[in-house]
Structure formats: structure tokens, C-alpha cells
Image 1: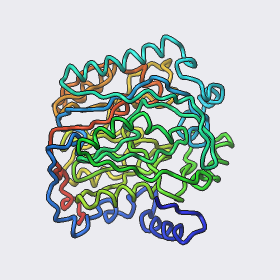
Image 2: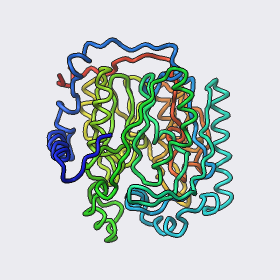
Image 3: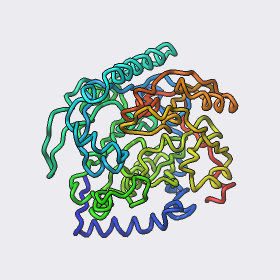
Image 4: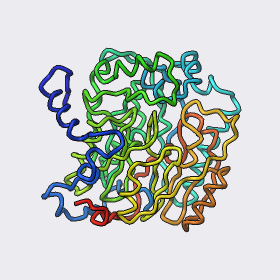
Length: 424
């Protein structure tokens, strides 16, 4: 594992690299050169990988779904309101986190709400199985256990959102670093599943976890955060570039092109780690930017429906829409969510209405109550399959977040004509 200390030569090298990667917030890392960085000459001529015997195989967000991991709410614990948690949660919920840190969610929110959330997730599993999808679930882990290491002490969080933890590219499982300290050992719930996939022939990579949280937390931003500024204010990023960190949910796959964002849980060094890792496959990683003061995870901001059609959050518009359209894609604004104001979000927002799961290019699992988004999908030739998951949304995710697709029937393809966008 590479450990970049603040005072080392390695730190200087990283800073120099990141200075080249990032010129301004409102542009891609450096215009088309970084947005569309060509793969190395060796990788540029690579043939599309084929591995029909692998138990893991998924290149994009829409190919026909065959196997998936669905998270579990069991044993979920309210995390301590450390700076990285406060940066990603509504300010009016901080008191809830202060009061309930370390307690089970089931004991902290209304009993009826929790029971409905659990019931919804189980029904979601049944719907997937009825559609012929094989479903695996994480192991039971005691997230309330306290651990102390690397200068910090924390309890766990949950194993509800495998999308945050696991990035699947082709026949490879990539464990994200995870930036919240409460999620440092979240991998334990998934280890038996990943080990079995590896035994059956899948590739398995563990990204280097942060080792110095004192260095990776931005002290100037923490001061602003604690001063009581509005959670709508752009006060910078809570993470520095001292070493790579990323959540898998900040990346979305479209064959030979992967799109991501710099967020409160994914830094530029983390993006660069993923970029270098997939480059030998001839896959490009593009950083998108959005009008979003506190970004965390891309899948309620910018999502792919099927080849040629992407959907964006109109409250968080993408700065690179013109380039994407020039490359042959339509970008559609999602309709305003239809969520009662009384519905609580302890983590997340009503825009989880965008957080859908494609069964294939013609069918999508979507929130039952979001009739406007049902109609949007019908207009683009996709049949919505309504499923209730709104109570489960309240702890941080919807259809996409609660899952990680392991196997989709299809191969590595290129879906963007970058030459039309003026990219090399």
C-alpha cells in the first residue's frame, strides 16, 4: 500500500500530479485531455476481454441482469457524527446522530418506519428473484462493536449499501477504500461472498485503505463545518489528497467509459487510482462536475438508462453535458420527486427517485410512488416496474444503492463517439 505522508517526497509527487489533473471546479480535470484521456498505446489496441467461465461479469449499468448482491438492514448502527458524516448529512439531522451514535437504527427511528423498510427490502429481493435474478446477501456482522486503530475509534455502520463498497468491472471485484471511518471494516460482511467468487475464478482487488485520517481530513473545511454554515454552502471538500480514497458509488459504468465525480468521499487521488487500474483494459475514466455543494455518490445525480440515453438531476446539472451530447448521447432531466414533505431522510434526499436499477435496456425497477419518473421512462422506451422502497430510502439509498450487480449478460463495448466531441 502506498502511504503518502504530508511531509514526504511522495506527497510532493502526488500534489504535482493532482495539480496537472485539476485546473478548475467548473471543468473536467483538464478539458478534453483529462475528460477523455486516451488509454496507453498498449491498452489502446487491447481486445475486448472475454471470460464466460467467470462468476463475475458486468461492464455497464444496463445489460441483462443475472446475479446481484442485495444489502441487509440487519444490525445497522447509527454512525458517530464525525466530520465526514456531518459533511454528508443534513444539518438538521446532526442532533439525531449525536444522540443516537452507536445505537441500532431499529431502536432509534419509529418502529413502524423501520419495519416497513425491512419489509420493502425483502420484497425487493423477491421481485428480483421472480425476474430470474440470482440474489446473494451479506453475512451478519455486529456493527455495534467498537474498534480502535490508526489513531481513531469508531463503531460500524451497516451492510445495507453494497454499491458504495464494491465496484465491479468485467470479471473483477474491486473493494473501495471507504472514507467514513465507521465503514472501515464493512468489507467483513461481504468477505464470504467475495472469497467464493474468487475461488470460482473471479479477479479480486482490494484498494489501499486510508492509513492517516488526521491527514486525510481537511482541517480548514472542518472549521467551516463546525461554524454552523448552511449545508447548502459550498465550503470545499472534507478530504485532502494525502492518499487515495473513494467510494464505489461515485463511479458509473458505460463499457469502455467510466464516469465519476470528486466528492466528499472520493478524492482526485482515488479517481487516479481507479483510472490507472482500469487503463490496461482500454477503459477511460472521466471526471464529471456538477452544481452540488456537498456531493456524495453519483447515482442520484447522473445515471445511464441504456445506450445513448443518460438522465441528470436538474438540481445538480452536469457541467459536461455538451461534450456528452456531442459524443452521441441524449441527456434528459429527471422529473421533480413526488415525496411528501413529512417523509424523513436521516441520510439521502428525495432525489433517490433517480436511484433506479436497470434489469435490462428495456425494463427498470423504480419507486412505486414516483409516477412522473415512470412516465419519463415510458417516453424513452423503457418499461417501469414499480416497487415500494421509500421507507428503506430513509437510511441512505434506493434500488441502485441497495445492490451491486455481479453478472450482466454482455461484453465490453464502446458506446461514445468521442471524435464527434473533438476529443482525441
